[in-house]
Image 1: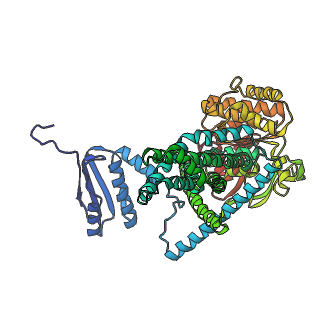
Image 2 (image 1 turned 60 degrees about the horizontal axis):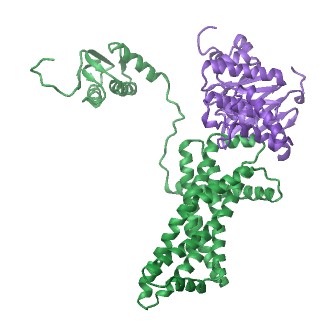
Image 3 (image 1 turned 45 degrees about the vertical axis):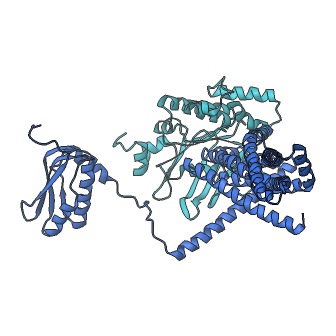
Length: 383
Length: 256
């Protein structure tokens, strides 16, 4: 490179001439590469529009130093322009490689399969949403029916499933969830006690912290926190496991072996959570009460024995039963949501992720809604 | 072949129309598969070959028409009866579709445990036999994820053979295999057909397999949405005048 010319960023230039009345000649020079500064095809387009007599577009590329896909996209735009205006596209002077790639790029006619994303009117959108909801409800009902039938088979001892699968799921969803359930419920007990202590201290009624923590853990928070942890931990895992099996055609393989995937995959998962969520729920109640006691004894200077006695007198067996019923219901709902989303999974890797996310969302929504329904029912029944 | 009754054919597909909702994939498919055939389902990408296989093995319900096995319709019988019919099928899926949470031995043992009264030790012997047949002796305790793609396919084949099926279905058995492995799989399929007397139905693109082991075939076309040729692939190559079939069977090369 000549020492006097300043080092410039690589760039391509074009120069449009009109040797005769009906020919437009584009002179390409410099570097036509990705990242280089390039003129836009609009310049040529403007020239074309300015001279309506043009019947042919030709090129001159002897000064073209380097080129890549950037030149090709430029030329394709021009070619399209020429096709629209019925101008001949004369590529004879372009480098050989460019000509061959252009031929390749234009060889396959655009497939009509490329569906137009049309803007839909609000009414259409609304109607479609209603139809989608109806379809989703139908799918849910079918799934519930299948699960009910599979459970019927199980009760009659005719369901085909492997006991070892059940134990593995019980282990994964029960024992292995203990650390996180301990941590969360201990902290929830602690938080409840703090909140209560601040209020109750004003009346000198610190001792009732024991009642507050005990009742709320047993009746509500134990089941609720366990449910939410399990929806995030196990519900998502169920959806991902079943979704992967759908993607991998493992569920198809079950069907062609004459094994019902609902019996084989969903029933053990439902059973596992129906057993383990109530157990975890009791455990969470006790750990939460322990958390409350730490605040009561450590911060409010209540005696440990006094706190224990107060808790005993505040709690009845019924309070635990109320929580247990909730826990069992949550367990069933979490397993249903996880398995439903897993079995509905599309046939791609990203669909598995979507299924897991959807399982958690569905699970938590179902938990909260059923919790509200159960709480109101208890209230009406007076328990 | 004119006076044949449907019950003479091992598989008889009659006027089958396949559709997803209102989207028709293929219509008016009628063909027979004889006992002992190696029947090839071929056609360009996206023409519905795998969908046809899913209809044959009972995973998808036909929009119209029938699939008959030994003269008995797969779709007009009680679900329990259909399940029994499906138990005579062995299916090798495109990806192997081994149950990933089980070892190879457990994969192959599962159908045996479910449908036979064999003792665990007898099942163990059968499992080892099936694995040995596909060249995987000693891999009983491996999980599918620890195997290469070719080995997974062969293990899938061992599972498909677990119940000594009458009909083996293969969905693109040689996709993703190197030429030598794919050739060995072909040999294996031939050997199994000859010794077990099974009928083989196979979806494949592999020209070499189509022409060497295929004895009968159907050619599906995506544009007209129906079958445009059937018969022995070698004969089709020699005699067919349909440009699409010729192009497919010669890889689009001008002469054979």
